[in-house]
Amino acid sequence: MNMQNQKKLDLAFIPEGTPMFSDLITMLEAAEDLSGIRRRDMISGLSRVAKALGRLPQDVPCFGRWLQPRLAKITPASLNLTSKSWQNAVSDARAAMAHVGILERRSSRIYDLIGEWQHLWQIVLEAKDPTLPLALRRFVFFLSNRGTLPANVSGEDADAYLEALIHNEISKNPEVPYRAAVNGWNLAVKRIPEWPRITLSLPSRQNVIKLDEAALPQSFIADLDALMARLATPDPLASDGRTRALRPVTLKQYRRQLIRFASELVHSGVSPETLTSLDVLLDPTMAERGLRQMLSRTENSTTKMISEVAALLRNLGKITGQSEDVQKRLKGLAGKVATSPQRGITRKNRDRLRVLQDERRAQRLLNLPEHLFNQSPRTGARSYQRALAREDALAIAILLYCPIRIRNLAGIHLEQHLQRPGDGRVFLVLTEDEVKNGQPLEFELPREVVLMIEKHLATRAPELCPKGTPWIFPRRDGSNSVDPNQLSERIKKRIRKETGVEMNAHLFRHFAVMNWLDASPGSYEAARRLLGHSEVSHTINMYSGLENKAATKAFAELVGRKKGPRK
Image 1: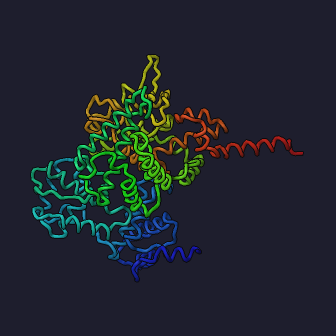
Image 2: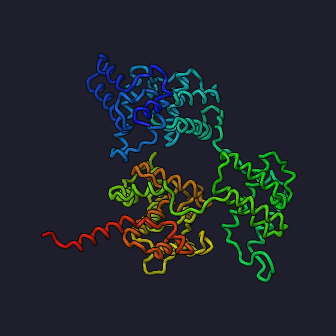
Image 3: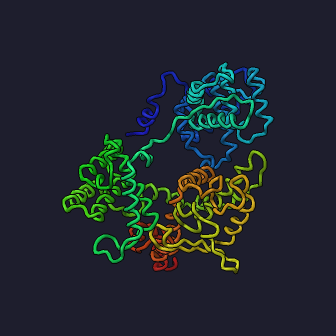
């Protein structure tokens, strides 16, 4: 397919008659109600946005639903722009579209509000709350323009606000400001006494599959817990079954997978009351039904999770002493949905690592923790964001020097995992029962990382957690460590925003090995120890080829030396 056909397909759902940026520029050049400076800024904004999209102005439609997903993917850092410069460009482009009536003009002055809203908004501003104005401003002006009085706001108004955002937003996902507005409204109910006592609801974004344990028979849960206890403390003298205890993290995963599988059976139409024991799940007919239910969510394509569940059922058939016929049929099911062993890192991760082979991009990432951490301190409404940026900087710094899994990073306990022998050194220590492969890990933290930890701990309360919280990355109430998935998502978004690089938490492990093998081609045993793999063969299988860049460069230099000096 040629480039012209691709471009036509990309614009296939644009409404007929939609003007392009080039049309808008022509209209602005002829507009007599604009000053020269304002006309120049609007045209410049349209041109910069088009350039960021990799298109000419005549190929960019003035259509919010087309622009939203594309502009949302752009990070200023990837364009070598500051966030403020990019915001100004997008704002000028939006103002140009509003000037000709494609989008609605935004109101932000308090006297643009109708009486009751004006009074209520003044109360919000005088409260000096750092959260409410940012979350609610646009929603409040929308409600005022809509003619909805504060006491009459309902879910229909919130739905209408989302529709308005979809039509008028060009650079962000409309769902984000919509959810922020509804959450901000409900927060105002709690914080502002004069705010209407109306609570707005948000539709859940989760597709809930795993049922609450209370929805399953207690006999099933008891049978499941008995099996987990047996696997946690096996009889070393038993003539059959396991003799080695499984680690707590493994047992937690097995328990979660089995409850999830029981839930899949319920979603397939099986009555929960019939799931009285684990034996019901291990019945081959029921096992096949549950697996088919899982496959229905993936268009009959097997996945790693489906393969793991089928393998678990197969293994439990043996552990629980099911009949030979049952074991044989469970083994057959597991074989049918088994995924091929992964050889090497995925293509997506290879592509992302290739970007980081560019020295300038790698330097952006390597210097990011210090850049974030040493920004000028701010107070007031920005103090929480500042503290959060420092916490993210610390997470990135630790991952750069200690390529551990995100679950271990999120769970770092100041007393359990940071060991200080008394000579000024600090070690991050993970025991064998805390890591996936059962291999203990120990890293000496560089002095600059230790100083970051000490400075952050001294300044993070009360914005991030109560004083004395023992986790480096805590929940905001200090009750426990942060959820690993939440921390991972924060790290990913922070790196993308600041550097323009697509980098998830697990990619730090690949990045570490890539750098090590670049410096020491073939040194897989050291790489194995760095990552905590149990077998060097696994390390070789995952990362063979990553050292190609250094190896080919060394070979080219060898050929050059063999040739000798030029005559």
